[in-house]
Length: 150
Image (cartoon, rainbow, N blue to C red; front, side, top):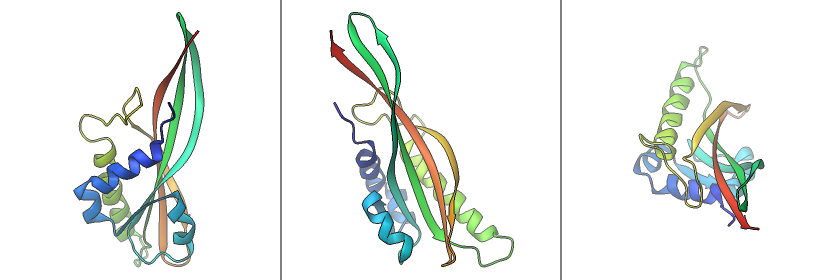
């Protein structure tokens, strides 16, 4: 079974009240290209597929292999107007916290078709644009056990 992790995460973000209150735009990869040049609704969040890779195969009467699924959550917010950047840093921190609560919560979220809860795997400055937009990306990962009878 193929798991569309970006679609599941996007649906979860769109369903969360905290996310809807915080972000003016919640979109997927298809929305990102246009947004990079003309982002009018800020703050915004985008869910992107990043990677799928193979884990170790496990053999015990059937073929089993762990499939690692990774998505990126990109946040676009206003660039700092003050020289220290404190305003934007606090805005990005608050926005990341809202996303983390929605995707991980207190007890974790296991996307449908996955065998593990979604986990944060890193974050970084994605882009500092000269149009006053700061782009931050957090990566999340889960896995799926693929089973095929031998």
